[in-house]
Amino acid sequence: MSFAALEEAVRDARNIAIVGHGKPDSDCIGSVVGTALYLRAVYPDAVVIPLLEDFHEKFGILEGAKEARQELPEGFTPDLLIVCDCSEAYRIGAGSELAEAGIRTVVIDHHATNAGFGDEAVVRPESSSTCEVLFTLMDHEKISKDCAACLYAGIVGDTGVFRHSCTSPATMRVAASLMEYGINAHAIIRATYDLHSFAENQILGAVLSSAVTALDGQVVFGTATRQMMAECGVTPKHLDGIVDHLINVVGVKAAVFMYETEPGVFKASLRSGEEIAVSEAAKAFGGGGHLRAAGCTLAMGAPEARYRLTQVLGSLLKESGGQAK
Ligand SMILES: [Mn+2]
Image (cartoon, rainbow, N blue to C red; front, side, top):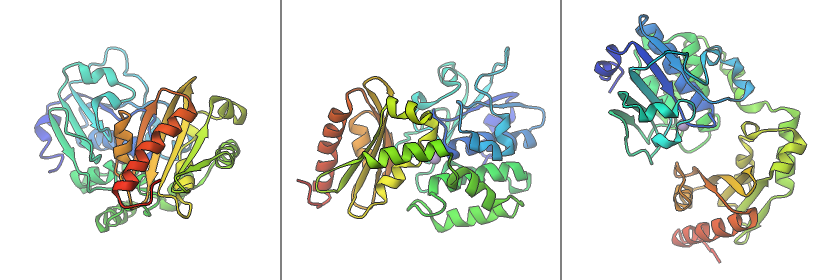
């Protein structure tokens, strides 16, 4: 499969909108913007608009990210919608109304929970990231340096700088190929992954120092209430990566980071090691994601959310042969 194979859908389009999931992360931003830059190069007559919700200022290092808009220009009616890194239509962030508008829709993704919505779907759960999928679909001659930088950032984000188990030999080959476009790989990793603001470090410290464990230390919960976020001066886009600190603890088999979006509503990010699939736990609460990285929303107080997640994670651990009690 390639963009050429999708050509029938793409070739005749004049107005193309590209969207991703809400609360965009590296892979979402990299895939939405990377696709836009690529299609503009291949189809210079088409108008291509990448739509994304507000995202972290650190992505300013990606030249292409400046092209992203939160809304379509007035009077712009897309005749093709491309949905990147989004497992279900209802997860689309900016431009979600387009999914209902009867526009021809192409989906490009790597979430195992993506059942393939839209008119055409390329879903490869074996790929580390949507950006990795995209590189294999693109004509490599037509990838610009800015496009390569976007794709590289997406792969870096979803693989945790080539460390998560989703990193395959194919991932490394794609990353190596992207480096050949002359991108500053080190600077992209440092800016989009390593660097944090002082406020982000403050909230990280507050979450870690108030974290609690369950099931004999096999499960850990970190929580950021609205009050904690206000005290540190951060918003949800500044909370990425906290859950990774929680899972990287000896003996922890599942980690949950929850932050309060409105009083009594928590968004939870779940991570696990080899033993269990946290996507199953997320699904139990109407969420989804990958086997070892998933998310869900819980409309309840923090103690109840921790209690109910502990029950579900406990059964998963039991099934896996762990010592859930
Ligand atoms: Mn992704």
